Length: 456
Image 1 (cartoon, rainbow, N blue to C red):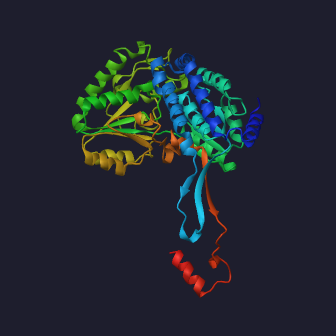
Image 2: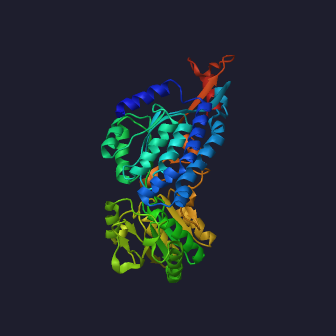
Image 3: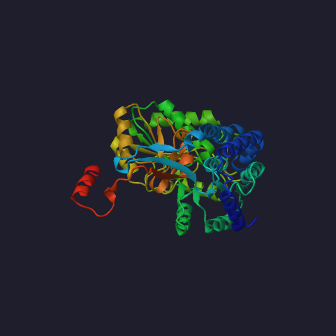
């Protein structure tokens, strides 16, 4: 169907009020939950085709998190949607103040390829829970998963309620020429700027989930073995193609060698001595990104791993030591299984290094010192992160997830998704049995004195 016709069809469906009924929203979310559960194997196979993900990783990082988010929304939706009472100030006596959450209308969700199911479905869930119609645009770089998502959505929703548009740049461009009531975009900074530019034409509100170089700091008081395990997990999950993966490591010089020894052993324990032979270790999404990552590695600085297989688009987990800010690997978000290591002598030096760059989507600190922890949280601005862990802060529906500055704007997950896809409409209901004359002309000294008593 032509994109313009689909948008118009959804606008009419929304205007008819079909999506606003709370029981309808909950019913369709439950239907989506059942459909995902019944199609787990097809979805997992699609993600293996696109990214080489194992069935376990696909469930843990995408399917399972989506089902959990659905369950959370279903349980709490009625509570979130209730009118919210506010205290009415004395100047507005006698009245009642309250807020209502109303859906925006027809919304667009544009998702990336690295977590092609999760990052498409979670915004959709929020949009539907909020009472909107939705058009989904999965990434052309993950075609198998995009096709599986389209089949799933067609099974659950009529196209005037929710629909999937497949394709690449031409379809993206056509969608951004349409007038939507809200746009939710997950991806890179360059395209994020274009989305915002196109949205500005119609003053369309946006959420931008972007990325950046997320730092990971390990100080001399940290549990090195535990830090190594959790950093290896977060960095090499999905072959490093995770927007909140530790992008680079800042480590106290006194513990660097001991830590790198733990990290090397942990990588071997997780992926084997020959990761490229491990069927559960994924692959880089395409040849373009594979070659980009190969070009970021400086061979003489690779101290562990880094073997490549162009035929299968696989790069073994790599550690680069003695890295400086001038190295190619520090000039852009890596988005791959390469961990640059930079030593520091004082924690303040590490903080300054982070502050010299753009605000990251995530930041991580491993420490056993509470003062260092407080200093880190006070000094460094970032979207979200962990103390003594990596990545897992996004795996909850009880906290919002989003960026700041160049790493994005807005947030979602759980209640934040419902709020993101709704407008808060604030109302003051006045009663007519009393109407104080203070605001009406003519004014005078007595009225002025009383007004000043109320408003100060």
